[in-house]
Image (tube, rainbow, N blue to C red; front, side, top):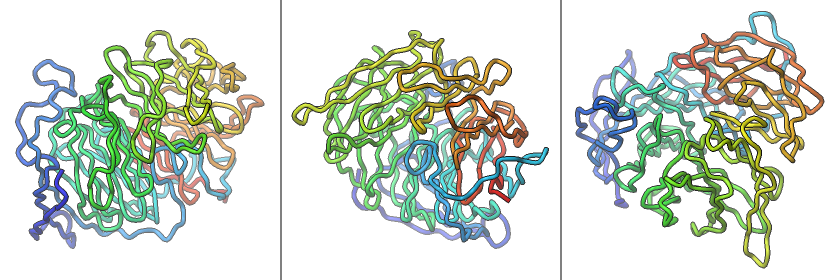
Length: 472
């Protein structure tokens, strides 16, 4: 990847009155200008076939909007929040009851087909979207105040709908926003202005095989670096957000391939590393890669599934909980324990439970106050102890599906497939629902949640809403 990026600005009229559009023609080896006409799925192959058909370079368009950043302090800067645990760190008191119609809707926006959730920082809401009419990936920055668009950055990518298009969550800091598009285009922009910094085409540059249902790996920004798992010619890599230069790369001798799972950071025995669940024809495994230099600190095949979706869950100082769905090998969940012997990290499984005990298809379970919460394959919300034993379930009379869930102010917010949001006490004493309301139209309401300033942002296949869940 070239170190220097040259931008040519071509003013043009675009969008609604008053909006100013600027086209950036980037000459670095980043992504695509000329797109071939063949679409994924058009020749009978899976819909992800043809990922990487684009040429290496791309022309992107930055469009300014009328939105203004909100003067609100809340933050949800990446997938599953600040600590990658789906637990809000805010001290805002939230309401424990709702009127019959549910929490007040502060704003609503139409979105392209998909399941991508948002990141929130400094009064701005960030979303990777897909514009079907324009056949483009679109990075959108909205006001947390009213949902009005502050800016958008789009680049042409032709994809065919395959259970929606977009499904990742941006990572954002006060300087950068990094997104990963459905076909593996990683884009870094200035988080305030939307100005282009760099782009990687993981398929073209690193031989990534885009998994079925398109890319679902959410990028991570850590210490000014974008942490990515191409799982192609390299297993994992760190990229300097300012320059776009590669800081380190991790070799991939086992030829693991990209899964739908995302990278999560962990600290143990004085080391900081990134955990990733990779796949392969032999089903892959789990790896811990040094944040310092990209060296593999530990690796195990005690957990290996081909279609791994949930992110690894950090449990206390030395354990990692993993779960999966889709009935693969009848592996439901496992708990890995890390040990340190003279600076060498070893990993062993403490238990391995079948699907019937606990398994999760799309969403990642939550570790909270000594217990693990998640929606099982039978659609019941369940609470586990740290030995993997079921403490309680919501029972077959209270089911959910593949919708997201998160915890804020001691409350568990759980969405079902039809857009019904349920408020539950987040404790091990039993299933205790406090409120329930239909807040979305109910078409595959699967996008991850985000909390900020007493507001909850959720979405279904085509619409995103911001709800006022603060205590009134």
